[in-house]
Length: 107
Image (cartoon, rainbow, N blue to C red; front, side):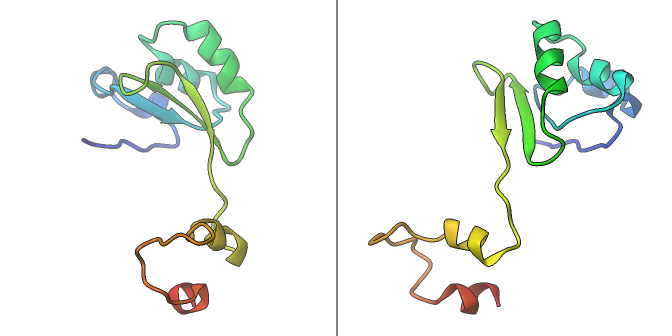
């Protein structure tokens, strides 16, 4: 498995793009980039519409071989104490990470 990451997907060689089975893309503001990401994809018009409606932060469209249908996902916030609490064990549960506090773990 390989993950290709680029801010300008239109600059990726067509041969490479044709070999990517599953794609994760955030909002793109350049028509050439949108066309490059959606090349060879069934339902290109519908996906283009979905892609244009993504929020500028924390949303991505995942589509391709690994999924039965395209999915818009919201990326979890990170970097704050609250966001790390969300990653901890559920009440009464165990995460398997020991009994240390979040402050010990994340400083």
